[in-house]
Image (tube, rainbow, N blue to C red; front, top):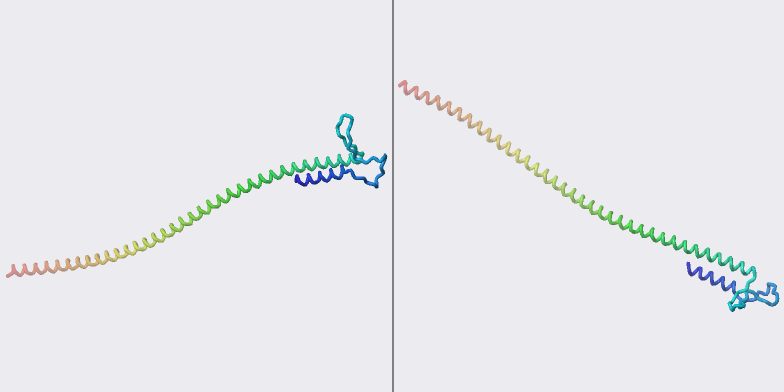
Length: 175
C-alpha cells in the first residue's frame, strides 16, 4: 500500500512540478509556470498559477485521504490477523478436545467390550453351575432311591428276621 502511495505521489510531483512548456496554453511575458525563484531573504520559493495551486492542493488532499485510508487498512489488517490468530487458537483447542473425547470413546468402547466378555464368562459359569446343580440333584435322587431301597430291604429283612426268630423261638419253646 505504501508503494502505491509513493508511486502516486511521485507521479503527481512529476506532473505538477515539471518545467515543460505547454504551447497550447497562452504564455504571458514569456514566463513559464511553475517557477522556482529565490525571495529577498534567500529562501527558495515556487510560483504557481491558481489552476496549478488548486491541482496541487487537490492532489495533496487525495494523498492525505489515501494515507488515512492506508492507516485504516493497516488497523483493519491487524484486527483481521488478531481474529485469525484467535480462530486458530480456538481450532487448536477444539482439536485437542476432540482427541481427548476420541480417546475417552475408545476407552469406553474397550471397557464395554471387557464387560461384555465378563458377562459371557459369567453366563458360561452360570450354565456350568446349573449343570453341576442338576448333576448333584440327580446324584441325590439316586442316593435317595438307594436309601429308600435299603430302608425297604432293612424293613423287610428286619420283619422277616423277626418273624423267623420268633418262629424259631416259638418252636424251641414248644419242643
